[in-house]
Image (cartoon, rainbow, N blue to C red; front, side, top):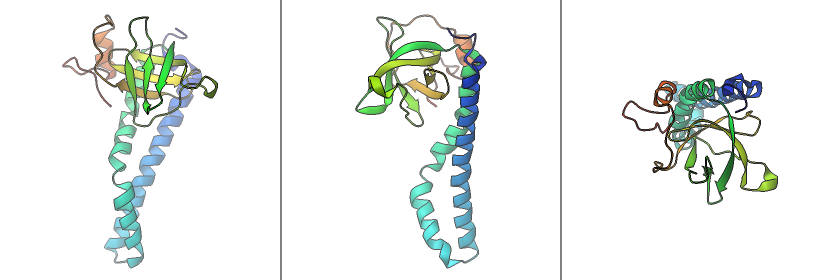
Length: 188
């Protein structure tokens, strides 16, 4: 463990603020483009017709994903404020860039999916293998970052992990939003 909780690591808090700002800009950009296109069409300006078509075809499908990513950024902050960083070995699946395998012990290495957008977590010199930082509960997911904690990314289990990991604090996982009341992990 590097600190008591990941949030105590200054580059992590700065990285989270950058993440929140980035997601707010994405959401604001998509929403404003939609509003401008619809307002132009409502005012009867024909020049906005191509913009409206472009908005409907290109931007509207991404709006729900970006809105969910913006809303769920709070879960990232909750995890970082409750769990410590742990440096663990990681493997990227070359066929699926959003999937990583984290080795917690010799016999337990679940796969996780980065949500909503995949990033390269390990350094380029080692290719798809290398250490990463993980904060969270291995049963339900958490937050990963390249070593240094400066780029937090939410991860969820790619498949429901089988037996092999016991322990964990169900109360803490429920409080930060990694687990539902039913005992299942959250997927966003």
